[in-house]
Image (cartoon, one colour):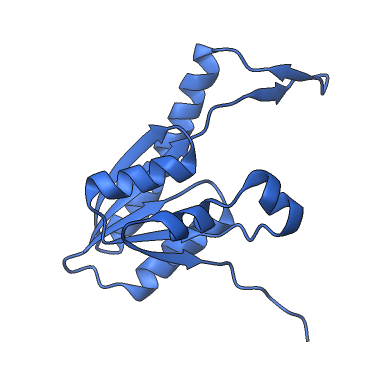
Length: 151
């Protein structure tokens, strides 16, 4: 079974990793850990003034370094749990890259963490997990962080 695991640096991705390890047997499973680097359109300066992002090789190199480290760390956790794991870092729109990567790699399953966006935030920012679940050619497991309710 080929499992695509898109990750970002969030508790939602950590929960997806935990879920994968807890629910799937390592025998015969190949996991591809994928991170998508989104284009930076604007950033805040030290004076908290928005600036339009220009091609800055230093910023892009640092983002690639951080993304590669994130994917390597996640893949190592999965290897330690016994999974055969490969790594990928790509640039673009996460929704499209995940769907394209899953199709080209012939994934049997995509496991993606949900940020739980609701209302206007979901409308404005979109939901990667929702788009992937709606448009993927393979099965998709959306993992949510459990809500802790006080009693």
